[in-house]
Length: 144
Image (cartoon, rainbow, N blue to C red; front, side):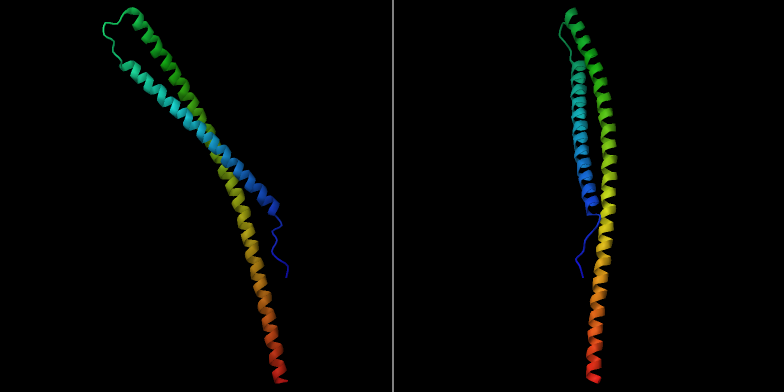
């Protein structure tokens, strides 16, 4: 009997490559998200530090400068929150694509496994049939 051959092997390989690319895209999106969150935390810490600072005998220039800096940090914090939310959304999209690619590959893996199991069963059945036939021939020779 010929050896096992999965006719859809090229499709399985293509789906494996698609899954690998999806995993890489998800990792890149996740890295970008973490970078945005880290930047957001840094800006929030700077804002908290700036609002907590107290000057001894501040003059008008220091007060205006601090107010402008705090205003800048508030705007920057808003931008960072928006960028982090956008990165989070992109990361979730990539996660969904990765999961879908993994499911597609697993379907092909299951199909290959089922076909291999059927092949092994037929091989076992053919072997059993040959052994039964040999046993029958031997029995008839001894009796006859």
